[in-house]
Every structure is written in structure tokens, then in C-alpha cells.
Image 1 (tube, rainbow, N blue to C red):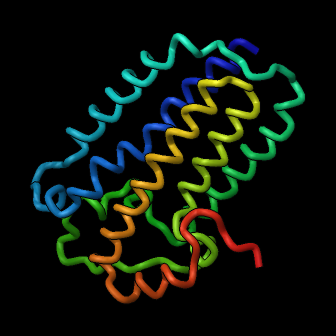
Image 2 (image 1 turned 120 degrees about the horizontal axis):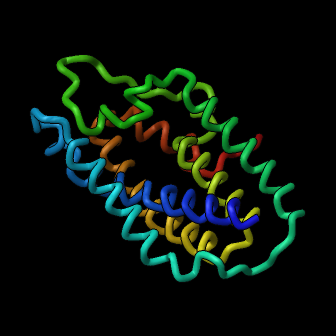
Amino acid sequence: MHFLRTLGWLACVVYSTIPSFWLMIHPRARRWRQNERSPFRVLVPAWIAMWIALAALSAPWRTVTIYSTQWSWLPAALLFAAGILIYRRSAVHFSWSQLGGLPEVRAQDGAAQRLITSGIRSRVRHPIYLGHLFEMFAWSIGTGLAVCWLLTAFAIVTGAVMIRMEEAELAKRFGEEYAAYRERVPAVLPRLD
């Protein structure tokens, strides 16, 4: 159980910094695209530094549990499976470069970008973030760690800000097509009609 709790804490540290990573990108997307060198040479080390800082800040509370029961891993397992399914469906019709965020930071050399609105994206605009959320909730529920719940809350708050910035950047990139898509499809919590 100690190993799983430590793994859950570390997973939540990494997951909770994903919105902060993207907050380094979206407000400056145009500037990143104008740079000839890969922005990931700056962004990835900065992201790793976030992991280290957040791990150091949260380490004193990594053993504080709200509850402790092995039964909590049953709903956690369902959330893990749902998150993995969402990730798999998110990859359909999406290239590895799109999944990695390359269109946000690299000039496309005249290649036309297109907005993907089919598959899972016909029900939710940001399925990968939904998958991240499922994984964080799975770790939080499974471990019962207060720090995992706090990191999940941090990710939700920073994620909401990041999604707004990403949406503004997508609106600039895709114009009316994105505005119409945004009207039809919810951001993170899908309609189940």
C-alpha cells in the first residue's frame, strides 16, 4: 500500500503540472511558433522543474490519508480504465504531433491545419484533459491521500484557466469554424445524449 500511495502522489504531482505546462505555451503560442529552435528545449526542463518543486512542496503531506481501505481501489480501477479508454479514443484522427502540441509551438511550413470534430471530439472538445482528470481522480480515490485530492483541485483550477487560454488560441487559429464547434460541443464534461 505504501508503494501505491507513493506512486499515486508522484503521478498526481506530474498530472497536476500539465495545465501549468500549457500555461507556458498558450499565451505565447505565436512567439513560440516564430522561434526557429524547438521551444521544447526550454519548456520540458521548465516542466520537470515544476515536478521537482511541487514534489518538494507536497512531500511533507504525502502520507496524510483521509481514509484507508483497499476497497477504494475498485472505483479507482474503473476510473483508470475509463481514462485509458478516453486516451485511446483521443488518439483517433489525431496525429502524434497534435497530441504532443506541436501545432501550438511550431510553424507548420504552409501545411494546412484542420479542426478535428469527429469521434470522441464530437462529444467533448478536450478529451485528453478529461482523461487526465479521470486518472487523477482514480489516484485520489484509490490512495485516499489528502495531497492527491489537493493536487487534483490545483489541476482543476489551473486547467480551467489554461482551457480558456487554449480556446482563445484555437479561436484565432480556426475562426468561425471553432466558434461553431464550441457552441455545439462542451469543453470537458461530455453530453451523454
